[in-house]
Length: 244
Image 1 (cartoon, rainbow, N blue to C red):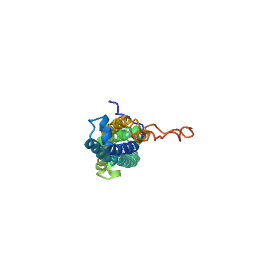
Image 2 (cartoon, rainbow, N blue to C red; image 1 turned 45 degrees about the vertical axis):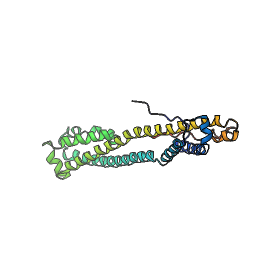
Image 3 (cartoon, rainbow, N blue to C red; image 1 turned 90 degrees about the vertical axis):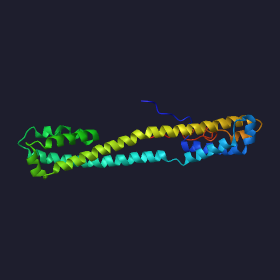
Image 4 (cartoon, rainbow, N blue to C red; image 1 turned 135 degrees about the vertical axis):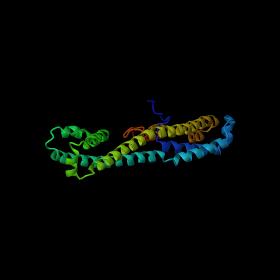
């Protein structure tokens, strides 16, 4: 599995983008002096990058991705709860309807119930085992008499819903790393451009401490509480990690 792309900055995404936009706005005003140091730099390039930064600031794909995962997980949890209740209900009646069949409970997977209660994949396997054995002529009539005819259709429907919910959650989680990498690559490019502007400004304004300060990039992580340098250093919080 390939390693997830890392951010090339330490502050949060929103702080980085806000900081970058501020520097680029300064660069628009100072374009002539900046071009005297780096002639290849253009106003159009800076303006295009500002638009890109604004798009990034309005990019809620990370929240959307987490929302999709949350919805899928909640649906899976609801379906799992139905499965737990239905499996408990089935074995209660199975053991009474087939009390003369010593091996029946084992064939239906009774020993795997506890593990299946907390594992969706094992729950799906258990339901499949119940369904596969339900239509055995040795069991079906007795089970139908107690559970009502057509009960197996209910189990099949529940099994389908569970496997669909497992697949939906898996897909949501699978899509997020790719989306995250695309976003981080875009943010890294924005950051790299801003850093280059600031490097140019250091030379262009080498005679003006005040102007150099305007282009200083505050990328250090936040100082610990109680540190004597907390007030001295302009610091920002460390980048929040993506949820797994």
